[in-house]
Length: 312
Image (tube, rainbow, N blue to C red):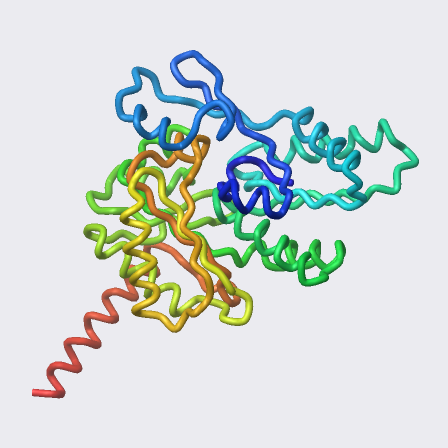
């Protein structure tokens, strides 16, 4: 189970029989269910011309409870639900309430249900869900899948760059400090997750700089033993995602699968047009932040200058 912000493709959702609780999007006074009543391309085609900013609301507990009941009717006895970060939405809390309600109504049930707060946004939780489905196919049991998720969820590395930070600022998906920094920056900000919320960790000039940052950080951070696939996300510009995939193939040693997936309406409401993201598992907990990356950049430039002096 997951909420619709996992933004996995319909093909993957159907292949692995993943139950999806859709978020609700309010557009010009009308409610839409994410990916059901409105598709991503439809939404991005009108986003720039909307009179009012669209808003989203979390799946209520009833939506999760209905998925649980349907899964049990289909013969499931173990249910793993992976939700977007509790720091950005109440989706996780809704799933927990649904679980409690189910056991209140079925006190003697032997069904096993575990809810994971992924501490991720968008295809960060999607990465965990897809990995769990693959591991299940390989024979991992329920307890092993729980252990994997609770162990590695803090190692899902996010990178997200947007054209306009206003959507994230208005919705509270950025930390207060990052929101302030974002208003000051005149370049492309790159975000990651910190304590369950989005935070600006770097800034680059232009798309080329953004993609260079993604690939450089991937080479330095990637856990080569765990990352057997990468997810690249995009909102309205597929060509940007294709460029990033080509760059990864050309400039890294990664030989696994690279999935390109479009971010859905719920996520797109908060990140806007022209966004591009990347998700993989990083090794350890290497610190990431705007000041750290700025200092590293200065050090690199100094080293380059010293190298030139020595070779002349």
